[in-house]
Length: 68
Image 1 (cartoon, helix red, strand yellow):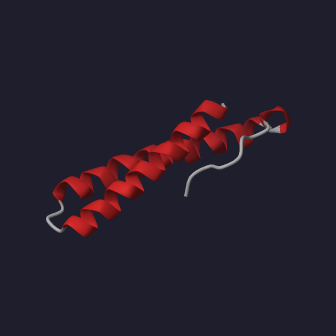
Image 2 (cartoon, helix red, strand yellow; image 1 turned 90 degrees about the vertical axis):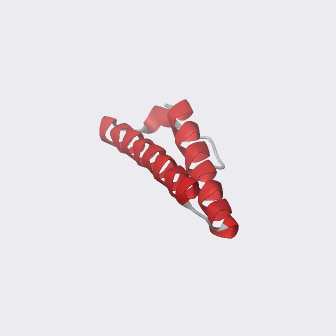
Image 3 (cartoon, helix red, strand yellow; image 1 turned 120 degrees about the horizontal axis):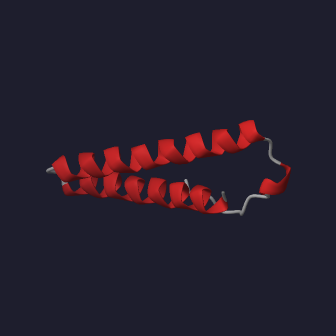
């Protein structure tokens, strides 16, 4: 799932900002793990599924990071 709308960060508390950073970091980790799984797959359909998941996680992480 990718982030579709921009965030209004003017009204967020420090804790909420830290939570967003944590979520972005989790998505970066998901991207890395899913890409690693894709690299190890022999089945082309499963490989593609992992690659698409990795791409989606990377986009979400980037969007969250750019919003900060």
